[in-house]
Length: 163
Image 1 (tube, rainbow, N blue to C red):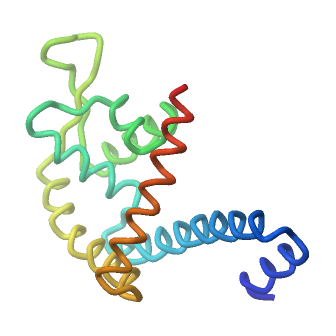
Image 2 (cartoon, rainbow, N blue to C red):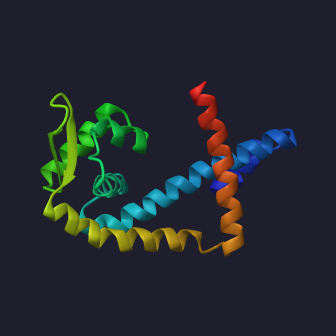
């Protein structure tokens, strides 16, 4: 049975507002899962995952202020344990390094190695192509409206988490 037919069966007889919000939520989860799988497949020849790619991109973007593991954790919506494992793997592959923070010896700052910068340069076009392929089903206006709608849901959920 397909994803859609299962979802249709599950939603049968539910009030329209409930069915609409459940459908939208399940589709967001499903799209995120499929997009991550697509990006992981694109990155497979480079032997990294989307999560590793995102970490490398965020670390590389920290040119003005060094990134700390806690910053990476909040940006990736990952626990400290997950980020520690992620960084352990990146260090093991020789792509990133943790060093004592210049101003606060109690904390660490993250940096890319030369190999990490090179790999990121090869990975970026692959990831961007996967993003473009995933969203090309929409024209520019549809994508803008979808982005606006997702931003509204995000901001509402984020604000509720902060109270």
